[in-house]
Amino acid sequence: MASPPRIVLDADSGVTEDDIRALTLLGPVVRLDVMGLDVWAVTGDEELRALMADPAVKRGGEHWAAVARGEVPAGHPLVKLVSMGSMLSKNPPEHTRLRRLVQYAFTTRRVEALRPAVRDLTRACLDGIDAARPFDVVAALARPVPTGVLGRLLGVPEADREALDSLVTRLLSGTDATVHEELYAYVADMVAAKRKSPDEGLISALLRVHDEDGARLSEEELVWTVVLLVDAGYETTVGQISNAVRLLLEHPDQLALVASGAVPWERAVEECLRHSASVAMLPFCFPTRDLELGGHTIGAGEPVMMVYLAANRDGRARTAPDAFDVTRTDSRHVTFGHGPHHCLGAPLARLELTVVLPELFARFPGLALLDGEPERVRSLFVNRPRELWVTADPA
Image (cartoon, rainbow, N blue to C red; front, side, top):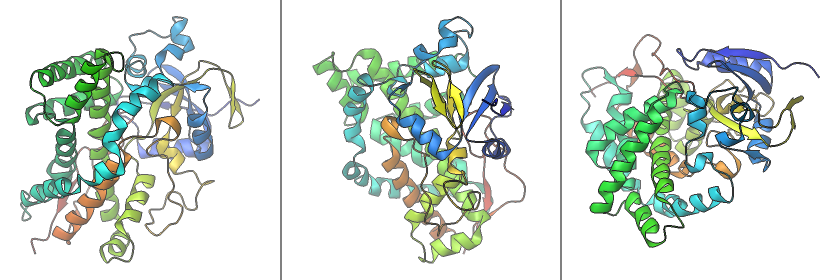
């Protein structure tokens, strides 16, 4: 069998659009050199869906054969990342039990009830913008809305949000070997404070589950669950709002279709999610048996990177995959994952996007990007601009 194509990713510069384009051209299954690790990467839409839905493919560092053999140090940042104790690194039945305890907070009805709060928070952010001067969309809107929404949902005090945001950014860089313990300790202290002064947020609700029956949710599981909710809810939505604004401003013809009502905002949001997912890829899952995929054999216990952004650009699954087209009927994507680990927060992310985007463009119809390529966040996994500077027509 032919050797798979191979590409090296630079952890210092992070993942770029060019990297993703190169991956999609190489094939649905490739080899990556990431931070000195030789890993597989699945970039094809069909192959990635099959991988994530296969019950013989597991999450969690305990399934990493090279780590068990001592060939990869346990202190490597990526080993620590995939060994975190949240449900993201768990498998059934543990994953099923943990997911069931929090999924009630993300039902369609409960999420829809947050719409007025998201709208009010968005409008407050827009009210604070001086339209006579250039402003950074990330700082003015894309960051404060998700952090505010998740803060209210979880009951995270406003004083803690900036520190948590910084910790999550370091975590998702993929290169920080100390942030895992820092983030866990910070959240553990926050949980302890909630135990003393409970409120109506999700953290307090999870505490009640733990205290009523510790066997259902251990103290460690409780803290890791909050870590995951913070991790998944902050940076990912910040990036998705930023990417969507940039896409629409770079394609004024597409923006005009949505702003005029010719295309629903919901359809435009799905195309933004497909075209420019804020999570380019995530590590790792591990086959527990030799797995034939994309014409290659992935050995049991070998790490496999899940490359969402490349799968969304798979030309075998949709026409003109690199084109941003809000009228397309093939905007199906894996931005929120697939299978048992499909993102619980997907309804909330969609709600925020369908509120924030129309509010922004209705308030500032003359919005335009400043010249120059925005600097990107340096991360192995996050795909978004660090800042997104725009000008607005005061009228």
